[in-house]
Length: 306
Image (tube, rainbow, N blue to C red):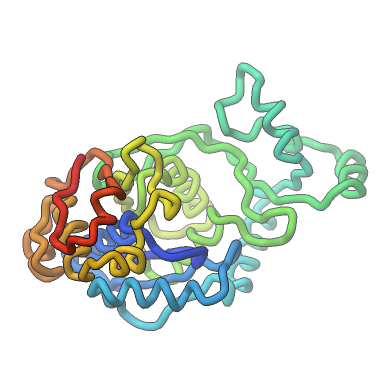
């Protein structure tokens, strides 16, 4: 049975933008008859106790999920299997570049900004042996395409650049692009709804999935919640988390109503929002959140801007 999912990293409390993404992922899944799954992406930068906090926040706004919770930290053998398959197919190469090396080499005219310039792609065995004495290797995918197309529910067909991206970091930890592809396929996730800051990652992930023989994924990259300066919303912006807002006098139902109304959906309940949900009518612009309004001790919902 197919599924959608929400996959937070337990690094801190969820802000209203994160909760908005979770609600949208739930709406997309439920409106299409899919299961809705929860996965904790805890391979890196975990803060003690934050998983429980985030689960409590999701439950508080009314979200529920099917089955148990999957944790990436418990799935190393699955990532190892995928790496072994890619290695056997000759799809991986060792990379010894530092971030500075890549940044300097990527300034060449023929390299796309932010993309790997191929510095270690064709090292000889002698050069690799010498490099290993200096630092451990990351593993990169040997891509044989420059562009790859994905289907996105909000962006139509989207074609993005694919480079030789990292699949295993030089500390041995599976990279995000590998872990999410393996996890989604094994959980039956064929619909991925997340922030549009990850849109450029989708072609890489879809291409990797094709190399592993995995089913294609339908994406939905949604506009982010931004602060009034149009930067990504963060706790440093003020009262933007569930905890901070309830401490300021808000009721959780009113916070949820503000989020739903930012999507042009009824704020009464998740059920009412689900009944009215139409992806084609979702806003295509970022949600501008003014923490000065949200920090008000007046618990009446403040109409969102943007």
